[in-house]
Length: 431
Image (cartoon, rainbow, N blue to C red):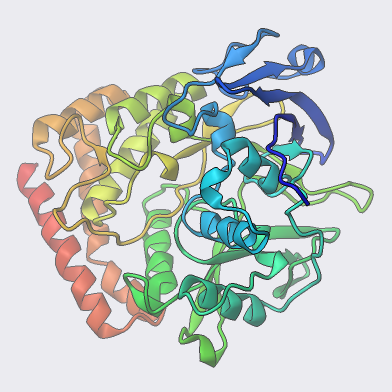
């Protein structure tokens, strides 16, 4: 079968009710990609990307950078890391060179499996339509072998989560509300979608990656930062892990009844897509994030939440705080709110530099930088922000107990504790 590049895609949105409706059309020529809203969508709903798209029926050209020639809101559906690896494996088996594919070709491959509410039609003919159920153990072991370069065989069920961000191997599963310990790769009535993050000895924290992230999510919850719901699942012995981390998809809404065609969805856009930032390079400041949050969500509290998250990342050495690790959710009425605090874990940079700067400082921000961010976030007095910082500094001392309780080895606990205690001590000296 001769390869035909994708020239046109219809964009659909799945509502929280499960209803799917047309949003507009994407089309490309040799010069650029263009988008145009459907008149029916304009009459009923709100802008998918308020800072970058005009909410009218005009033909809107995408910038050539930084999203591979796509508008940011649609580029959010493209895979990176793990998802890109899966796509490339599938394309190569079909005799296609990944470098010859356009971003539109990859969107067609994503089809209905993007995070958030958007989907793309027609779905690529290279996308497998075989979605036979597979056990979690089979999925996890296959994902590990792919990630470690031990096989080129990709189970179709892994593709369903292939557009989710990040480099770690993962898969999407569904838990029934009445039997949370049982999962399936097939959606059913009254089920919830979860992403299971597998491990590998080639990851920075090895097979303890999920356990350490679970510890961070626990502390983020104590800090009031609204992390996603999570659980730990038993892993087979041959995987090398004791347990795998599963995180509930916060963009999905469980089926209200069996007649619904699909899970309901909330529209999701990353800070990267919203602000046309390149998440692969340091291109955004927490000041930008806080300002955008206040404008988009029309809420001072939302801006202050992002300030608190910035402080958590500073204290707990999460230097991988790039613009794709912050996002926003839009409900069917058009209201926005910050997405849960996801992909938060111990992720030190060799030179101690954050992907997102603190009022101009990527490393060890001085007190004036933190005070500026607090002011932008809307704290009326520095003493209010300082009190929140001190509360989070207290949380640093709780890491060891939480991590050991989740099964993290003493050696790993010690290594992480040393670095986060040093980071919190630096901040404490500023206060």
